[in-house]
Image (cartoon, rainbow, N blue to C red; front, side, top):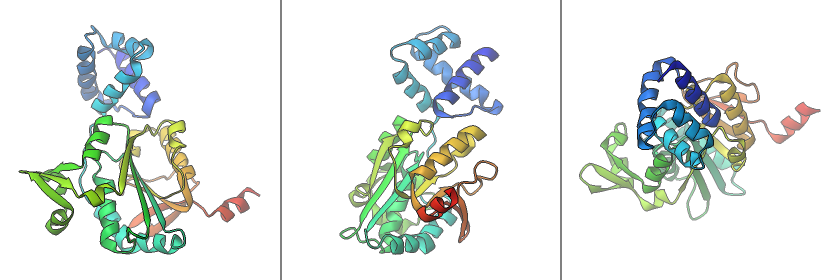
Length: 284
């Protein structure tokens, strides 16, 4: 691929989903684009670019390209300080706040293979604070990669997904369906719904509202500063008053936006939407 072709395609991908192709990723980007050029029996990256721009099947092909560019599996209970924060502190706050309506809503954005939202479902059950016969638990997992969404719905994981999971939790909430493959328990699976979503799409983001917690961990690093600002401010609109945004431990919103209140909680830093009364006062 020429430099012009790389720029054409990388800019097109960024405009579509916010994904920033760094210089260090160019070789891998070229290899993955070539797979799609060959799959469509085209002769050049430039011809592929025109295919994406003008062919009637561009949307279907764009999904295929994004899938191949965003393969990113994860594992259960990743970033243990966050998991401990949920179990020891945040669940108690949310139980008290929502005790009247008895509804808990959590969104795992860019959830990959589903390990994160399933981890949260397990922690909720383990906490004993939200009896499923009394509380309505809504955990939503979204990802731009349609293959990851399909895998998450299936709920089958190999040993690598349990690299830090205590054996007793794996045995309690999963069943081994074949050697080295475990399927999540139906009770946990029913607590989570999955769908495809492009975080760069304002219209799609507007579909999610009144979330108590949004997790978007280790994702913002793939966006430029403008993209980060757009995404996290749309998250703000998707949160319930006093709801929390959780980003990766190594990530920060410093110099990105100031719409959130910064809340230390245990060994984690959370970003909180203001209460409606505070927002109304600030606007006067």
